[in-house]
Image 1 (cartoon, rainbow, N blue to C red):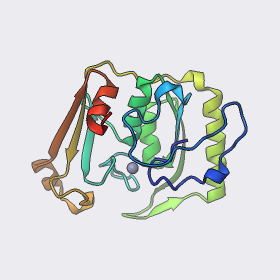
Image 2 (cartoon, rainbow, N blue to C red):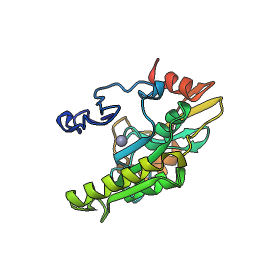
Image 3 (cartoon, protein in one colour):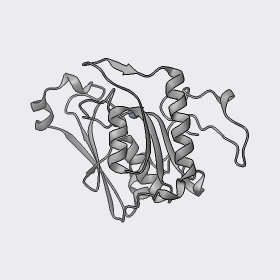
Length: 212
Ligand SMILES: [Zn+2]
């Protein structure tokens, strides 16, 4: 299990030690370019607590890596955090199989992996408010969906991207860390800052970005 965002969201005391491969936990930064996916350490990828990509209007806290990023494109295709994970997992032959998060994140997942199991545990209810399931209800739905996804893991295929690969970041023109809502639509179109990373493969493009 990878606790990616804070490194403190998952309680190691609650990992399930049963089963053939016994659950283990990865915490800490920085995330390497291979996202710890080498050697087929995982059979499939399940996202828990994921949000939609930067610019998603009805997403809760939608962003891509940071709130200073306007958009990320893999060979021209817009990708959020889940798309980036799917691409690097696909490089290692690992499919994404399930996502739990807000409604907008579930929609983004299904656009990318239509067969995926999704569980929307919350949705935007106002400008900056959310409507959530109860914790027990959310947990029950997530457990059931995870079981279904794992039981039919052979239904899923990995996202294979033929090289060469271009990974493009567009930043808001304001200083890094400026929240997106502070910018007007016109500001965004005038002067997005662009950074491009290239590689013969997805992994090489990620290494150009994150280092080897
Ligand atoms: Zn994020």
